[in-house]
Length: 591
Ligand SMILES: NC(=O)C1=CN([C@@H]2O[C@H](COP(=O)(O)OP(=O)(O)OC[C@H]3O[C@@H](n4cnc5c(N)ncnc54)[C@H](OP(=O)(O)O)[C@@H]3O)[C@@H](O)[C@H]2O)C=CC1
Ligand SMILES: O=C1O[C@H](COP(=O)(O)O)[C@@H](O)[C@H](O)[C@H]1O
Image (cartoon, rainbow, N blue to C red; front, side, top):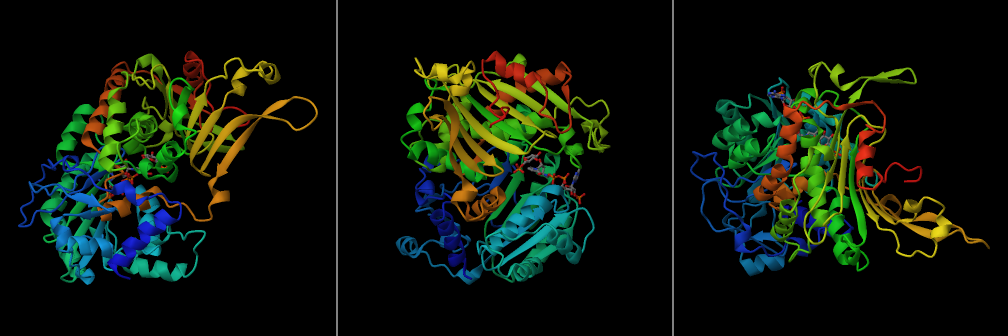
């Protein structure tokens, strides 16, 4: 399989099969759209690598070389162009023939290779998401012909042990099981491991040596995925940059979220790194703009005149098991709200962008974030799960985790009311709710519409007029769906109304399995696509919104409301919604 066929296949597969990458989405970015990198990590290598640093949960990406003042790259017909590396044939993205001809690229596709190093390969995210996503991309033929995957962490492991560990979490798509075992074996043969410290240039130099052996003299493109706790990001990037960046191709770094703990620490990290949010890679989040901007019926209603509240809900039915050490330092607001939910909010609420170009979208998102009213302490509810016994099974409380301090006040649940002080959204509460160890696992956006004025059918609804309002639900996961609750006449001779759903259930409509967000994200990183990256001004605005209230919560040592493991969370969340005369949409019997 050639690089050309792999890339084109993947993107055309994506766009032709309802997976959303419309070519226009990445067309033409203006020169101003590429901010030269301010990466403080210096490379002592002769050739300066491109560093694309991304984070799941925050900021932006830059394709500018570390200390290079070269003009920004442009994106043309969905493909990077006017890029020196590209002209030399160094990128894994190969332009279409038409593009190639126009730009005069002379690409020898056998000439380049991509080496992907998963830093923190022994960890939870690497096992659960990154290796499976890489395998899915391999299975789909989305990785270039020449690629190698390296796991890097302090744990001692042989290549065989890494393969064994990785093999336990690989799965085949439900709709494509053919040759699955064979493909897995082929994939695993291309996975290797190197043990090293995250702050050791020598250990990264050893990795460099191994990478070179595998690259076999080809042009080397290198992607580092930092799946490690944030406090060691900078050391790892520095060492990777100094000792194992590519000397003749690109070097990119994906950085996980959260990006810092507050405005100050985030600004310090921003000097060294930039990043992405994996929730932006979720299918239904990608579809948000399509739904809104390509259907006449929604956009005219998308404002304060028709919408009563917008709810962004994230719940997990498991606790922080095994991640307590990391989580206790951050809490649910930094883990989920400041990044995933706020990013969705910004996408939901933004004005129509000039185009679907990444920069135009980010320009609109940042305007939303900067229009947001400072969050008031009384608009935040915090909770922490406690132990609960059900059916003879004891579910541990948050502080039962040995890595969590006994007296921890870290919230594992939070609800907040946010407001966007602009003409479109003035006075509309955006309610956010995120929690661990709740009764279900779900992520969704609920748009609650206002009451129909002078509704002729009021009497048919009984006393609960709220039941009569429309609600649009965008269920991000699981069981991806978009449904609209409408009032309908129950068939029969009488006049009785009920609430029914106009329902687009993805599983019923589309036979293809939905790719994991990490697949999209990794592919974008390899291809140099910046749509899912968060720009540093977006990150600054996101932290400016949350930092004051986080500081206040921590300084005042606010005690979280305790809720039983597996419950619906603290009742305080209901009072918060009631203050704004709304109800959480996920609480009714019929949701
Ligand atoms: N897990 C998840 O579902 C998600 C995680 N993330 C983000 O991904 C990153 C990694 O998360 P996750 O995999 O859960 O984390 P882990 O706690 O599993 O850490 C990953 C690896 O980092 C090394 N490590 C852990 N703690 C330290 C430390 N204090 N000092 C040095 N090395 C350490 C360990 O490897 P070794 O000891 O072998 O070196 C560990 O295997 C985080 O930034 C997190 O926010 C984002 C989204 C989801
Ligand atoms: O970023 C994070 O996301 C996961 C949930 O991701 P999902 O794609 O499985 O919904 C969450 O468990 C974790 O705490 C957080 O760091």
